[in-house]
Structure formats: structure tokens, C-alpha cells
Amino acid sequence: MTDPDATAEGTVVDDGDAPELPDDLDAVREALVAWYEADHREFPWRRTEDPYAILVSEVMSQQTQLDRVVPAWEDFLEEWPTTADLAAADRGDVVAFWSDHSLGYNNRATYLHEAAGQVEEDYDGEFPESPEKLQSLMGVGPYTANAVASFAFDNGDAVVDTNVKRVLHRAFAVPDDDAAFARVASHAMPDGESRVWNNAIMELGGVACGTAPRCDEAGCPWRRWCHAYETGDFTAPDVPTQPSFEGSRRQFRGRIVRTLGEYDDLTLDDLGPRIRVDYAPNGEYGREWLRGLVDDLADDGLVAVEDGNEEAVVSLRR
Ligand code: SF4
Image (tube, rainbow, N blue to C red; front, side, top):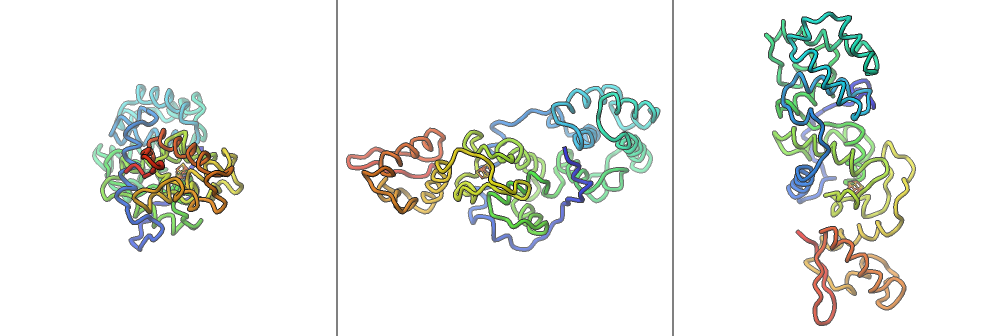
């Protein structure tokens, strides 16, 4: 795992325009949140709003694979269930726990112990709720502060980490520039919904839009808007060379979805020439080939096909 705070990846908010985002931004947002809420990986810290438990999960996952963090996180909270318990613990015991569980740099255990003491003494046992104040805690950088503000208090800014950059670059062709990522990420997030939004977009980057994208397999909710899905170029800031994927079929699926977004419906013969110049109804890339792609998209719930008397009519499922 990377340590986002170590690379100063931030949570900068800029209210400038974000022309990279589609006009129907509400639909983009709703699609992602609905996808996340229908199914996502279950981590125990996603079931709590306790800032202490969330802080521990964030610090542990900076350097450790998430599936290994789960038992360590559970053991840690069993040993020290509250900031008061942790603050009262012997620092040597906390460090020993950290190395026994192979959680990476021991200074993180020291910082957590120190931060618990700060919460107890400086904040009367109550965590501060803003990203700015959370950064006053030992070892808590901008990324971690924002994650705790989002997941515990629904009070954070848009997270911008490596996963989020990859998603935004592919989906909306956001240039590889930190200010552009921060600006677009901030605009994309619905106001006051940092908890569900940050969870959802990070889940998208982790499950669907990984370095090798799984657009169709993971049912990515942004296929109809996605620039990479349309063009077949899945490179990203952290994926400099084209990852392997199932070839041009995916590219044509993307073009179909994009094209249908511009029309109410189209017959196969009206759709065909709009997605490839060499479309010929009875040729190799003709109706039969196109029907196969369209049927796959219908199986995925992305398009509707109506078999009329003359010719099948295809539309986007909205
Ligand atoms: S369609 Fe594919 S490339 Fe585009 S955002 Fe979804 S998973 Fe990423």
C-alpha cells in the first residue's frame, strides 16, 4: 500500500469550472452511488462512524494490504477500544503490537499513541471534526485527516489518491496534473456527501478501474460517459503502457454506449456506420457482428433492444 500523506497528495479544493465533467453530472453521481450501494467490499471500518476506529484503520492501511489489516484492526480495538485506553497504554506495548502484526514502520504506532493523548488532553476526549483540525493530531497528514473527516463525520473534501486520479483520468480525460485532479474531484463530489462519495469512488478505483480495468466484469456505472471505455486507451498516470484487455470489442462497446447517448434510439444500420466506418450490413462487420455486441450490452443492462417488424431498434437504458 502507498502512504498518500507521505507524497502530500492533497485535498485541495478549488471552485473553478470543471469542463471535463459531463453536463449530466447528477446522473453521473447517482450512477456511482447506486453502484456502490448495491454491492461493495465489506470492511469492518466501513460499518462504524467512530473516528478513533477509522483513524486506526487508515494508519494501518497505509502500508499493509487491506485483507491483512482486518485482523490487526480488530485485535487493536479489542486491546485499546477508545482513545482513553490507548492514551493510558504503555507506548512500548503499542509498538510491540505493531511489529508483532507486521504493520510497517513502528513510528506509526508511536504517532497513534501520541494522537490518542492529544485527543484526550487537547480536545477533551472528542475528536475534532474538520480536516484542518484533524491535521493537528500527530502523524495525521492531509489525506488521513480528510479520510477521517469524511468517514466519521461526513465532513470531508473529495479524496484525491492514486486510485481516484486513475479513474478521473480515464473517465473524463482529466490531464495528469494535480491541480486539475483536485479541481475535478471536488466538483464531482456532491456537496456534503463525502462519506458515501469518497467510499464509492475509491471502490470504483479498487474494484473496477484498477491498473487492469474490469469495466464490464465489474459493471462500471460510468461506461456510458467514460472516455477510455470509448476510445480503448486505458493508460493512466500510474499505468503508462496500455494494460491488457479483451481487445477492440470493448472499444466498440464503448462507442455504442456513447453513440446511443446522443440519440433516442437507432436501428442497427443507423448505429453501425456511426461506430465504424467500414460497417456493411451483410459484411464481416455488419448486422450480425453488431447484434452480438448489442446483445451483450443488453445482458449487462446498459441498452434495450426492441425487435420490430423491420429491424431491431436499440436505445440506451436510462
Ligand atoms: S468504464 Fe472502465 S475505464 Fe472507465 S471508469 Fe469504468 S472501469 Fe474505469
